[in-house]
Amino acid sequence: MPKLTPAALAIAVALMLAPAAAPAQQATLHKSPSCGCCQHYADYLAANGFDVTVRETHDLVSLNLDAGVPDDLWSCHVMHVDGYAVSGHIPVEIVRRLLDERPDIRGITLPGMPAGSPGMGGAKSGPFTVYAFGEGALAVYSAE
Image (cartoon, rainbow, N blue to C red):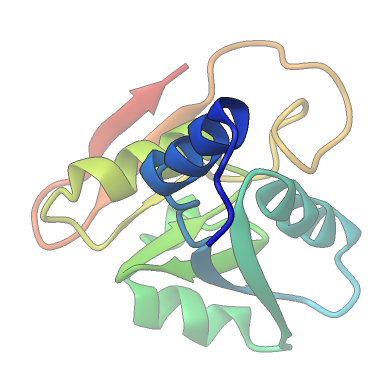
């Protein structure tokens, strides 16, 4: 058996002790076939470590209703990720916070298509108010 040099041994030990890369978070994003901003949002998520499957549909109404998104807080797409519904162009940090905290809710939504949000053009003009929804009362989840 050949002898390892001290440098080779150090590299071997470092590789054995290095944490394995976490697998990408799986997500399914449902969007209208004609919506470019939703595709930009999917690309943004992919660039930030999510494995996003895009499903085009002409029935976002049913998807929003099934997900439990309050009808006055809908956005242009609905994503399902690890048991939660995520509606709208929500910054990835907030989606990660949801997945880390695992609150007892059905999901979160950033209503409308606010300028400056991920996947949308324009400049951000104020905080993005993200709402938590579920069985209880609607609540602000984040205002950043």
